[in-house]
Amino acid sequence: MDLSSSLLHFILLSVTLSVIFLISSRKSAGQKLPPGTMGWPIIRETLEFFITATRGTPEKFITDRMNKYSPKIFKTSLLGKKMAVM
Image (cartoon, rainbow, N blue to C red; front, side, top):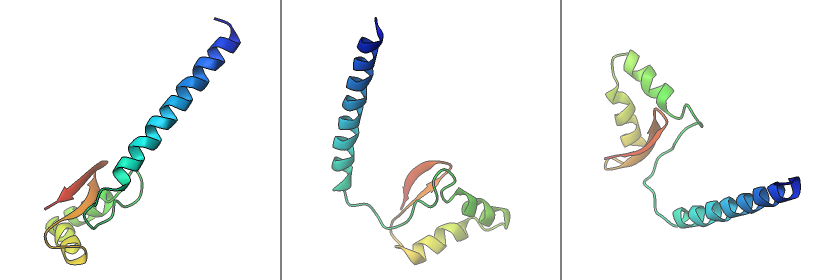
């Protein structure tokens, strides 16, 4: 393969992946999510959870969010995983 053929393949792959990403992000944009926050990228809310756990009250993390968002369900992210707590 020469350089122009490789470049063409790269461009086609990039465009295809971009279109797939845009389509999938639009589908998820219409979904209703529970109240809550995901926190900062990467560390998310894990740091705050570990701080309350080291103080001996990991349930305080949950009760604080239940009082702030909803006693039935809220969203959060721990250890890099998005989750809903019910």
